[in-house]
Length: 290
Image (cartoon, rainbow, N blue to C red; front, side, top):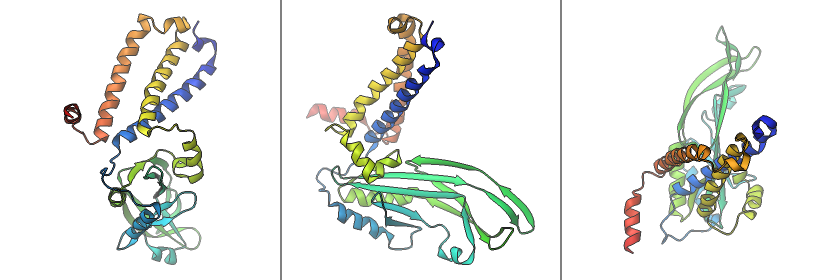
């Protein structure tokens, strides 16, 4: 009898291993896709970079970069303008976008986290017609798309009535291009992160204290395959009645190798796409000739 049939608690460590493996995979993929500035470009100080980023607020831009608590900077996107808040009792947005940045002066990296929440809830009247809308979902991490949404200006009084409807778009791609350009010209690296605590000053300091003194690419490049083999090995171990003795059997080894070849092939192709299809063979020839 396998451990799966004996006890259902096997799924807890399996789930934790799988979550950690996916986290390590995504962290390693990000380190492969980073576009670092030229080595001869000396990085400027963190305070000077902060001022350069705040200077992006000049001109007619739909977003503003402001200083924030917990992290260093936030990107504030006002899609309707201040006049709406003066006219209407309430303004409801179907799409809410937030971005936070942490300036890591030790690594010369601007760590960037984004969150988009799409929600649409309204119970009231649109003119004389009753209206009810409800839907919600959220995305976070690095979101490189153009979002479109609707802003509702709600008139005062009861029942709530829609005074004005405005369709808007959030071109976060263009905004990040401008930010990335300033960061790169300043000798720093623009580094997307996956979780909110990675741009929080206190939690990021504690997280870095646990990291060994090696590069992030090497660290996650080791943990990713190690966690993968631990996860797959654990699944085979709990599913096979022979336990440890069945791990290296031909019955388990053949599908394990086939699945691994498929997994790593797909992951390698996706990482290559995210890296911009770099000509790795030219790099290999250049390195071998030096």
